[in-house]
Length: 184
Image 1 (cartoon, rainbow, N blue to C red):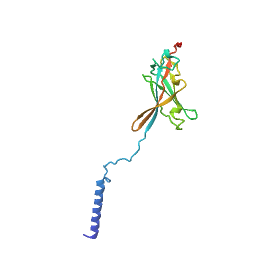
Image 2 (cartoon, rainbow, N blue to C red):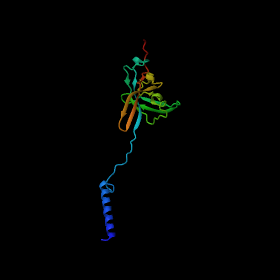
Image 3 (cartoon, rainbow, N blue to C red):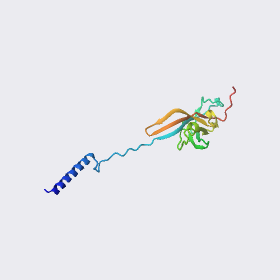
Image 4 (cartoon, rainbow, N blue to C red):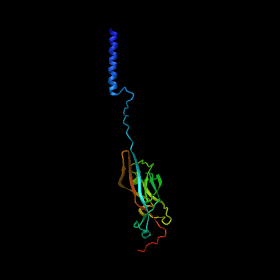
């Protein structure tokens, strides 16, 4: 064997050895799948307002009592938020379910100022309409006419990639229009 043949044979052995190490680690194979680089997932946070709308008993008309009140299915309420310049930054009407309960997800709500645009400061819930003709007069129970302020009751829904922060509006009420005021 000549020196050229020995160098050629040596280079073939070195290459074969290099390929065998590469294939053992999986770097040169076409069929092996590699994990994708870590991509952080984004967490979605929703702001939600909940509450109940009732038909107040005539017995308690003029008072803030909801004794003997019945929930109103299909009642309409609105959530109104104003920014620090007192301009409406969010408005949407919602409908109560069969139990008079509303779960208003404020899609599109945003805060430009952390304190002044916060839902506790900026948002109120107002009565809009009742589907019951015999119980469609607005009451100002919990300021349902002027705008019920929100409360934070430490209620959240949390999963791995989702969080809903839930604020409560006090129970709101309509009353029948044929109520005779009580004489105390």
